[in-house]
Structure formats: structure tokens, C-alpha cells
Image (cartoon, rainbow, N blue to C red):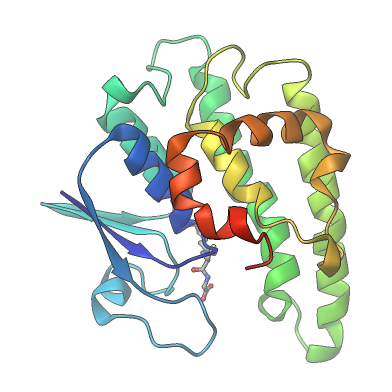
Amino acid sequence: MYKLFYAKKSASMGVRVMLEEIGVAYELLDTSVDAGAPRPPEQLAINPNGWVPVLVWDDGSMYECAAITMFLGDKHPEANLAPTIDDPTRALYLQTLVYFANSVQNAFQLSYYPERFADTPADEPSAQRRGNRRLTETWKVIDDQIGDNEWLLGDKFSATDIYLFMLTTWLRPSRGHPEIADFTSVKRIADKVVQRPSVQDVYAPWIADPNY
Ligand SMILES: N[C@@H](CCC(=O)N[C@@H](CS)C(=O)NCC(=O)O)C(=O)O
């Protein structure tokens, strides 16, 4: 039985889709991503940063979305969400998840949390603008990587496609972000991922209103 510290609009939604796809029992533990909102002490004891996702199981716990994605994919091979260690696409799988976490998510952080990167409030708009431009740069790398491939890793759906979809839901052109339509291969995959029953279920509030 897994427990997942969970907040709407956050990276914990991607982990929840993973758990749905695997078909394992899990419990959601309510928390918040709002600045200034208290976090449960149990969450902070595992992740002092106060971020989600945080995953807990019988005899362990961890944080960092990409690491949790890798952990769950390997732990439940029957779900076919992760190429095995000797699969030819394993390297691209790891590369893509780490690139999402390090580069694409980092660009989102600059845009959503400029105060963490700028030394003074006056510098924040500059950090934010750079983050928005960085979103275009990093999504273009992913778009080119996909090219005409059916899925991120080629012809097989994987956890990277779930991760891609999750990240696209954070794009807000009204905040100066690029449009998903600027990245035609990314959009083609996101449009397929959203049709999966697991995603329809977890992302129902976003599907009803992408600005929820
Ligand atoms: N590197 C972390 C970042 C997680 C992260 O930034 N989570 C956001 C929601 S998507 C959060 O909890 N924000 C609240 C905060 O930063 O205080 C990961 O990938 O898990």
C-alpha cells in the first residue's frame, strides 16, 4: 500500500497517474503547494523542502518526482512503464526523465518561483522572463528528440510520456510561457496521453478547466 502526499496542479499528479497505471492500492494524503500554507509534519520529516510529491510505503519513503517515477517503473515491471536495464531504450529513458527534472522543471521554477533565483525583488521579473524563454529552449529540445516517433522512446509508451503530459499541463501562455502548439511532436503525444483512463481520472479537474 502506497501513500502519496498530494496537491492539485502539482507534480504529485504524475505520480498518481503512475500508481493508477500500475493498478496498485494507494492513499492520498492532503497537503498544499501554496506559499505560507502549513505542510503536514510527516511530509516535512521526509522532505524538509516542503515539496510534493512525497511517496511513502511500508518500509520506506522518498521524494523527487523523477526518482519516484524511476522507482515505481522498476518496482512494478509488469506495468511496462520502464524499459528494463538492458533494453536499448533504457539510456534514453533515464536521460529524458532527468532532463525533464533538471532542465524543463527548472525553467518552470524560474517562471513560477522567481524569488528563489533573484537576489532582490527588482530582479525577479528578469528571472521570470529568462525562465519563460528557457521553457521554449528546453521544450524545443524534447520536441526535436521526439520527431516523428510515436512516443518519447519510440514505438512503446512509457513513464516518460506520462511525465511529458504532466509538464505540459503547467504551460500558461497567459504568464508568458510558450504554447504547447509551438511543439507539434510534444502536443501529438500529450493529446494521446490525455485519452488514457488513468489520466482522464486524475486530471479530470484540469480537463474540465485547464486554468483550474
Ligand atoms: N525537484 C522536485 C520539485 C518538486 C516541486 O517543485 N513541487 C512543487 C509542486 S509541482 C511544490 O511542491 N511546490 C511548493 C513549494 O515549492 O513550496 C521534484 O521534481 O519532485
